[in-house]
Length: 159
Image (spheres, rainbow, N blue to C red):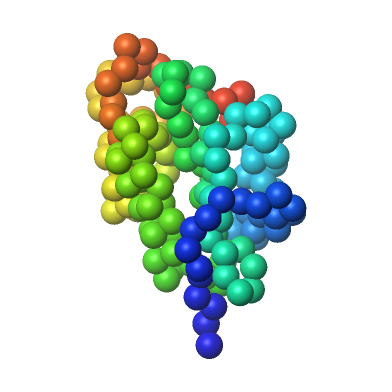
């Protein structure tokens, strides 16, 4: 019988090593796991969500505080354990975070596949924004009104 994930919840102290292993397995290398470690060390993490199951953590998503615009968040990385991918778990995890962003009035930016993230409630970033990353793969959930249209990510992203 296949593992069924439980409800999404916040990361608990002591689960960091399991998340490191999940990120390494999901991405096939340690760059994203090291990014999360760097975000934690620099206190740029705003929240970490996991998708637990009876067999351990099967999904993970990090929210970090953007340098600019002030008050905005970035969703990255997002990962689902390789054997659990293609079952809708990532879409559910990201969709719930997107809905939270919209309902709470928070602006949330993500870099990634526009086809996937638009299915999860994100929209393309409006014209006029600048970013060190490709704008055609930059999406947003929540309000876009800002006096500072420069997207500046936490220093850990430069890594």
